[in-house]
Length: 170
Image 1 (cartoon, rainbow, N blue to C red):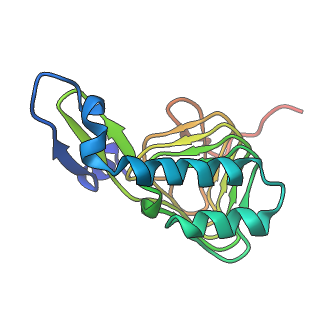
Image 2: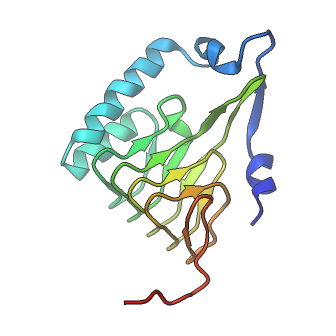
């Protein structure tokens, strides 16, 4: 799957004027909604209870499947949590970030992010808007996912690339 496909799935929102798009974020999303999302996400990030994390994240619109595990400090998108889907029995590792928006100079973009069933996202990984991590796929720790990850594939690096089945030395 190509990077262009991710970009094709993004919704582009023009922000006219001389300022960059982040300056006008209150026009994009209600500040009260973002503040509420932030508070709920902070509570979910520090909660040791997986059931409580899932409940809290569902309450702000994240689609959370059965048996999903969120590591401590993992963070779904604070502006558009309703664009995050984590399917059954997936794992989102410690301090991983799922972004569904990009604020740029003259526009901002939004796109759904899907973590497939039984997929794993490693500690510190970042998923960009519009990305799908396929069923049973794995994202290595500290990777930047800029493209879709096919089902069953393992990716690593910045930007994340397929591991290619190479054996690592013991």
